[in-house]
Length: 226
Image 1 (cartoon, rainbow, N blue to C red):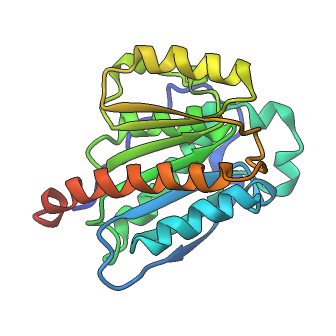
Image 2 (image 1 turned 135 degrees about the vertical axis):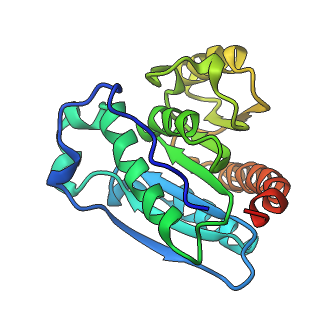
């Protein structure tokens, strides 16, 4: 089944999607029961140790892993573009269209895994493409900036935040209280935003992997009948 493209035109953004080409990689193991789509602001964000660890953990589960940079290096230097949830959401939507059109990935339930500025965009996309998305993960981001009614989100949502960033914890706590979908708030004790403290990176990758495996395995039988 190819999911129809959702209308994201009402989300606020200023830069036309057509002016840029998205860059990403796809690893597709034989017998994958789902696909983790990892969206990052740019290559620098993607190469952070904690993000590499999350990608490795998801791949070790037997998931297909697609990693996409939403901005090119030049765009990532522009704070005005980095903060445009609508622009990031449209680019995520384009990548998901490609996944939905490939014969080898279109039937796989998808987990949207995002970090930093892309978390708000991931929630918006999941809200529009709920039939295709089996889980959402937002790591150390601002889900409260999503340009949608968060109470309307139906996709199981995991929010992961470092305990040392109290302001970030507060923003995520407020969103967690609003969500009506299956949800979890994982505050990684002793962690900073870089998850460089002993044991914190392992804790982060563990909760992300467990969430994706649980919800994608649950979604896989229904998707396989499409």
